[in-house]
Image (cartoon, rainbow, N blue to C red; front, side):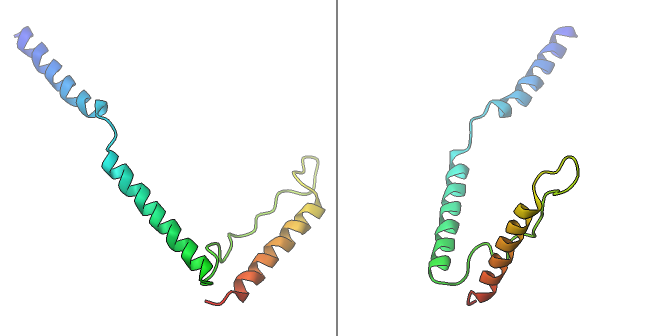
Length: 97
C-alpha cells in the first residue's frame, strides 16, 4: 500500500512542478512588444499631426510640504512648480483638438 501511494504522490508533485519549469512564451512577448510599438507610433503621429500632446490634461498638481521642521522643499520651489503646472494647463487649452 505504501509503494503505490509514494508513486501517486510523486506523480502529482511532478505534474504540479512541470508548469513552473516551463520557459517564457516568446510569441506572447513579441505580440506585446509589437502592440506597444504600434501604440507609440500612433501617439507620435498624433503629436506630430497637432492632435494634442499625450499628457493633456496633465496629472493633478501635488506639492511637497514647504513648512515646518521637516520641510521637503521651499515655498519658492512650490511657486515655480505651480507656475509650470499652470503653463501646462494653458498649453493644453490652446492645443486644437
